[in-house]
Image (cartoon, rainbow, N blue to C red; front, side, top):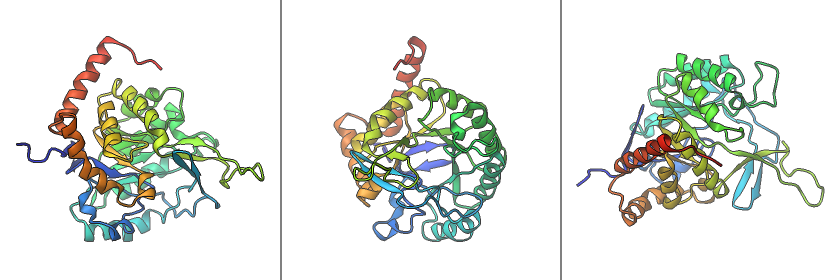
Amino acid sequence: MIENPLAVHLPGLDLKNPIIPASGCFGFGQEYANYYDLNRLGAIMIKATTREPRFGNPTPRVAESPSGMLNAIGLQNPGVDKVLAEKLPWLQDHFPDLPIIANVAGFSVEEYAYVSQRISQAANVTAIELNISCPNVDHGNHGLLIGQDPDLTYQVVKAAVAHADVPVYVKLTPSVADITVTAQAAEAAGATGFTMINTLVGMRLDLKTGKPIIANGTGGLSGPALLPIAVKLIRQVAEQSDLPIIGMGGVDSAESALELLLAGAKAIGVGTANFTDPYACPNIIDNLPRVMAKYGIASLEALHQRVTKEIRHARRTSCYCT
């Protein structure tokens, strides 16, 4: 009998189960700890952290959408000093055995390197999620996301990897013509793996005024509407790279989590579902064994080996087409 069929092993991350609250949707865990024991989770991806505190974008910053939501929070966070002095110690005191994935954001190569170095020295940070969906300011182009430019992606990832003391997973944006090009640049720069996908850019209009509901104009679309896109892009990257993928995008049930695992992900980030149901993550964890049994899956490790074999066979015999 398998000791723990839900166990997942990734570089820097030994997880009791594959379910991880996604960055930006779980804060630093303190609010959700009032609902359930966070030790039930595989890990936590904490809120994006920059060098300096950020208030974020003007309000309103959130708008509902069919099967999802738009948000333009603007990387609001207390800055790396406070995260190291207060947020991470609180998690260490209350949940010392829970792996923490620190989301690092920035607006220049130097900032990514600085924050990666500082935050990776925290005792309970076992991996970094590098958020490259930030506007580039190094080259004076505030509209271009770093992750939309393979050269900038390479520079940022290389700098973060060089300065971090833990594995670096790169969060890929779907707002590109070919996501595998970005993935290849990140891999060449030394990335440990990928988290994907980030939100898609969208807009909603107020019917009375004709103006955008969100003050920022556009926002990131998340929620169940993203699931088919995430499945496609995860499979696309998995067919091009052997690096491990933490999949996310539209997961709100054990069934949708399993779909991303079948696409090639090895662990799962759960985002927007936490807003609609604070118990989303433990519910998915509880239901996953039942869904696995329904489809004859003895363990996630066995599933990963099977999917990897299938993907490598597909890589040898065909191309992935849209």
